[in-house]
Image 1: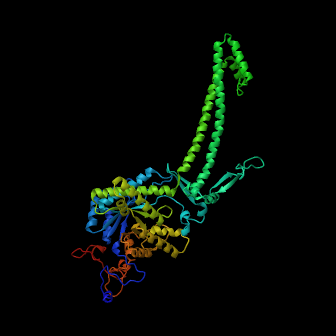
Image 2: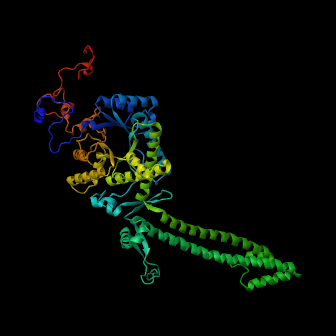
Image 3: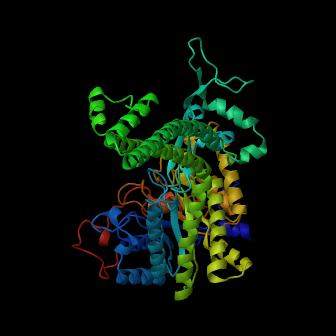
Amino acid sequence: MAESYWNTDYWHSMDRSKGKEDTININPSQIGISHGIGDPLQGLKGNIFVGASQVELGFMGQGKGFRGQPTGWTPESVSAPEREAIRQLAKINEVKLSTHATPNVAISGIGEQGFSEEKKEQAIHEIKRAIDFAADTAGGGLVVLHAQEFPRSIIEHFKEEKFEQYPTEEQKAILPLVDSKTGQLINLRRDITVAEPVIDEKTGEPLRDEEGRIRVETKTFDDYEKKFKQLSDEERKKYDNHIGKYFYAQHEKRSIEQAEGQAEYYDEKVRALEKERNIRREIIENFEKVMSEAKNKEAAKSFIITSLQERGIFPHPSRQPEDFEEALKDPLKYFKQEFKEAERSLQGWREGVISARRQGHQIREQIERIKPIEEYGIKQSAEGIARAAMHGYDIEKSRGLEKPITLVPENWSPEVYGSHPQELKQLVQESRKAMTEKLVKEKHIERAKAKQLAQERIKATFDIGHMNMWRKYFQGTDQEFKTWMDNQVKDLLKNNIIGHVHLTDNFGYNDEHLTPGEGTAPIKEFLQRLETEGYKGEIMAEPGGQPEGKLFQSMTGAWGLSNYPMYRVDGMSRSWSDIEHSYFGRTEGPRFVVGDFAPSKDWTLWSEVPLE
């Protein structure tokens, strides 16, 4: 019975042909298209006209919007009446909407100098207004944000997976650290060298050369890494099990030693000056007492001066002869002047001691505050995503939205954290934990329920085109790359991480947004994996690399990868490209066209219905 059905001359538009082993049975109705540049209302209209049942409305602008430029639109550029028009248009046409926040912010707050609370807050505001837009136009739903959290070395983390950013990365890779108090970045390079004194292993004292100078030798990062590996597990924990922090601590110990040595030197001067100042104070006090009690003032003055000369105190060795002559005239004035100078000098040297001590103390404190960028950055990102998700939860509950607002961070460029599937997984899981805690503490929700709510409201967007950009750093074969990617996607799906999908294509270097199937991204294998694992969520084709006026091809190209024909009117199988590039199933151009497609409107059908 089934066999005769498939061999008929007519199929319904959503019927499938008999599949091969490599066919993809994902229904085209599951595949939509995104509109990320320009007026979202006009974009929605255009995409409805090409048959989209799911549309993602996105924004490229940030801060104050500018409608005069396609990339200047922000959620706040869309007025309340326009939002209502979008909502009604989607509802009438049964189009499911999702929202894409600007891709030009990192919710971790990372900047050129490090992590900034101000930048983080700005990023959260961008996500919040995308959430507000989603609530107004889609009644909730998915809100996409780029996971571009912070830089990190590729080879340091993914060498075993055969990834390398450049041939000398292992020798020159940057290991970013963060001051957890200030957020300042400290970028260590693996090719750094440090001059260190040569230490006698028996005495622990620096060795000297033939001329009596302390010998120094050049140490490399590798030398420190060897020492680090020899440490016990307990000792390595002191450095967060991170070679970068260990190297930084060892290097900064030299600065501590220098500061402390300087402090000791200054302190010796302080003690000497204190002694000298006290002597001058004693002389002044005695001089005033003797002179006040003496009947013969000149004799008493002469006696004091002589006794001070015998003790080597008067005149001061640094004084010039002419100063001595002046001192003889008025010794008390002379000693008071010396006392003031000693006080001033003493104050300066004391400040030197304090400054050196403070420097050493601050370096010790900073060593304690230093964290690997992953440890600090993930916490910042997760907290930011959780805060944004809580904003969505509050709107959802206060307005009684028909569906939950779900944040879906998207993997982006390989050079930043969040792009590797396991990083994306970690980001989602940590964000869920952070939101769970907020729901428990702020909303007093029972923990099990809070955990469930967080899992529903924080998932991930997996962009196969972005994932394909890892190809340029892969040191294996194309087949190995496909296998690696398939295993990663399988893991994300099994752990309930992926809640949204973007389809774009490229040749493995940059995010060109080619039509699916026109590059080297393993889209077919990816869709097969989604099907095998039972993925039922949205799949958005993202245009950008299509000919002018044909952005819709990103969606029809994605449709063409599935095993669903559009129609069949004869005994031959038809493909999506047959429809897109033909006229009523014919590959040649039409002999005449009337209606809206005609160059002239001098003659049209009486009903004015266009001939299509």
